[in-house]
View 1 (cartoon, rainbow, N blue to C red):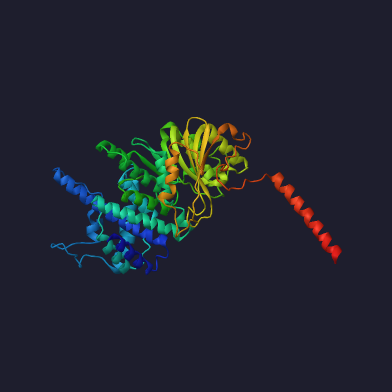
View 2 (cartoon, rainbow, N blue to C red):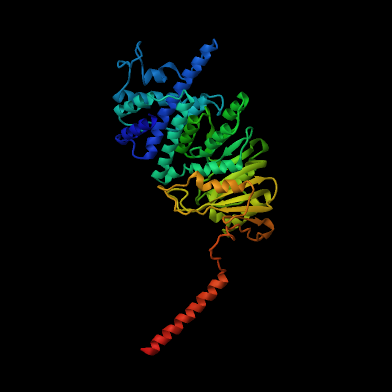
Length: 484
């Protein structure tokens, strides 16, 4: 039922002049879903309060509640066409009254971890792009039929929302920045193995995929008490995101998965000086896929001891600094980090090896991230003791990955299983830290066990062969010339 509803909404938005891409579709669907979620939450709390003999204090004023402007009902429960807004009246109400009202919530909220703050934060970043009031009415009527009251309804809606995020990611590079394949996230979470009571953080959270999967992992692997359930809701998951659309999607994704007021801040993580990080700011678990790309300005680089224009390298410094002693991390990063010879890369590898136990490196094939040509590795480390031995696993698949042939959980099952004991195999091996070159700290993936793999030759050997081939070519040309 919900799947067809999402398709119908996309079809409607496709016909509206204000919505041009998949990014627009999910953005506009998100704010409407959020308001419907909020209404269902209010109704649930109203019922609970009544059962307890109490009165529920509504967050939203009467004239801005869903039932007042979306689906006003007659006494017999049918749509009151005399009160229901449509056409230009509906669009103008949303743009000129509803959005300005909701934006005020951020300034009036007691703290950022409240639902009131999230309401204001979301609508400050948004605008209604649906130009036709008739199209808006069609979408609202569909969403009115969706409900967030049972676990089954929330599960189905969260699954479909994830599919929309994935679809958005495949629609173009901007969307893809927000989407990390869920099978990969699940494998990373299993290896890091967070526990109830840990504070879990993603400083570049995008659509909050890591936080959502960690939440699901903790729910499924524990018989939670009431106190533990409250802790998961309020004091476990933390994120930061700089981009407005990603922030909105991340908040909505967590809400649909069961976190009522996500602790996600809309901020530039890299604008924080890491020297200002104190013990109270630190986290037990870090799970992240920071954005790749050069071009970070000098003013931002001043916040880090290792200066570099590469975004991911600054994030890695931030993660090492903000991780608690004894804390664990699983970080996605470009595989060139392992062997780049520039000063920043060498210094960063040195920092990582000396301040953390880099115990596992997962080497991924190309195509894991649909639409992105970069190859990546996953760094698994614990803070507080230097690296003594690194266990490598090279994911070798018999097929090429891509949009139509994505990574799946079974592809990573062998890695997850072998990582528990760090066993050597055709695809895995260990390297003692004492064998790592102390001048370059090169961590390149060089599988010594893969059968049939040709060993890479040194530059000296390659130059020698080039000279030999050049000499042979000259000799052959001379012979040809003598025959003419």
